[in-house]
Structures are given as C-alpha cells and as structure tokens.
Length: 182
Ligand code: AMP
Image 1: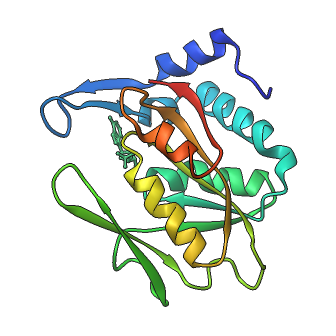
Image 2: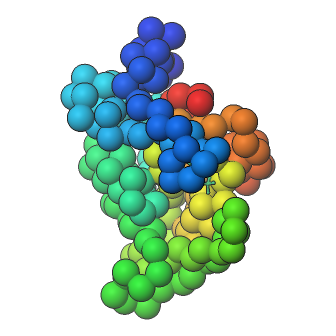
C-alpha cells in the first residue's frame, strides 16, 4: 500500500481530533492520541509508512521527542533498522551534539548522542515526527543527524500542515513525505 486511497486518508484524518486554541489561542492542535487508540487507524498508518520506506535500506530511524518516538520505534522495528531518539536538552546521558532552533517566541534545543549511528559510515537515516508545521524542529533534527555522521535520506510525518511553510522548506533539504495533509 505505497499510496493511500482517498477513503483510507479520510479514515485516518477522521481519527485525529482537532482541538481549537490549544495550547494557546489561534492554534488548532492535531491530537493524534485518538488515532493511536483506534487500532485500525494506527495499523493502517504504520503499515502504509512501512510499505512506503520498505525498499530504501534504512539503517536508522530517528524519532523526535516525544510523539516521534511512537511512530519511529515501530517503523525502526518493522524496517529492520535501529532506533535513535532525538531528545529535549538534558535527557540523553552520554555525550551529545545540540542544535538550537527558533520557536514562535524564543528558541528551543534538541540533542542527539554523538555515537548514535555506531560505527556505520554515512548511515542512512529516516527522521520522523507526528506532524510538521513551521519545520523548525525537523530542520534542527536534520542538522543533528549530519553532525553525528548520518545521511538523512528522508523525513516522514503522519500529517503536514500545508498552511505553514515547513514542508516546502524541508523538501529543499531532504525527501519529505507526509501520509496526510492538514
Ligand atoms: P514545527 O517545528 O513548527 O514544525 O512543529 C512541529 C512540532 O510541534 C511537532 O513535534 C508537533 O508535534 C508539534 N506541533 C506543532 N504544531 C502542532 C499542531 N497544530 N498540532 C499538534 N502538534 C503540533
């Protein structure tokens, strides 16, 4: 199932709950917890993403904290790849690289273990998160993957908010795929 039918897309979109004005006024929050607790929707999405990346010989899936861990760990298992967490500051216990990125107000930082990709030269890495909006988080993750010696071969999301420029901007840096458009 490399492409999702319109009815499957609608099935998945309808399983995501939209929460207006969360966490602050003006934001329409895409709550994927209602997709995760719907076992048919959850397996439909995971099976589709696995089929999409099946032939790409991925060495590692890097998941962005925290919702990227949910999809990332399952994808890694199913694609016979290792899983690498990209985490908020101070959470990873060994030596890390850091990347700072802009938020609407202020900045945030992500970290990766320096030895995350073991001794594999130019390891093929797929980065994943639940959603791409401005793309700042994903771009910071890409920088970290490169710093740690990996080669980011793609970025994958359950849903992309196309009202924001993140998807387009990230597409200039790597191959981007989102199962759903929001
Ligand atoms: P961005 O860096 O702007 O692309 O934001 C992506 C990160 O913020 C992801 O980890 C998302 O889980 C979260 N996020 C941003 N906007 C939303 C939204 N409208 N609904 C749910 N999560 C969001």
